[in-house]
Image 1 (cartoon, rainbow, N blue to C red):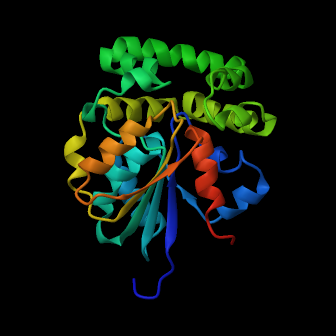
Image 2: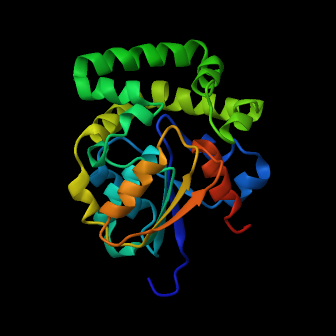
Amino acid sequence: MTGSPLQTVYFHGLPGSAAELAGFGPEIAGRAAGFHVAARGGDFARLADGLAARLPEGPLRLVGFSLGAAAALRVAPLVGERVAGIDLVSPAAPLQLGDFLGGMAGAPVFRAALAGAVPFAALTLVQAQVARLAPGKMAAALLAKAKGEDRALAADPRFIAALAQSLRHSLIDSRAGYASEIRAYVTDWCADLAKVRAPVAIWQGSADDWTPPAMAEALAAALPERPQVTLLPGLSHFSALRAYLEAQPAP
């Protein structure tokens, strides 16, 4: 690995897709142009094997946004010493670390998954039908009560179009993988945090109502080595991702 360039692997949110990196406009998208977007599906061992096949040499930086942070943390120990660092933006931590659901906009989805296979399957079926018929309206509805700087994104047609694309990707094109990973997320995976050996950094919006600041703090406390936590005043969920991407060096 000596002399090999650092490669960045991006784990998108759920629902989510590579469109997350394009929804803030071409200048910010250009800063993420070299990111490799990880294929998803809930089988983290298979995902680690896929990364090894796709990127066989050199150090890796894992970047996880929202529920993608959970995937990055669970994949990192399987990839091993090649992981040079892990950047987590608006990270979704294990639900078992605290009483977070009441402050999470996605709580109905997680509660359905916790309730069992039948209620969760029913919910994802309804979600898929709405995403098929009216993805733009679904995207707008998700941000109807946006907090902080996410309010500006809710009024941005370009961002709403990218979010709609992500909804279709997760709920229609990759629905089985989406459901599998949500089910994996709501299980207790706290023990996996002790296996993380690479340095971690967290970017968290102070006004986030999808993954609240208390969740990021609990995650930081639960990792083997306390990470650097950058609190972003006034930013919420997606606006924190925009700020993180803006801070990346131009290609």
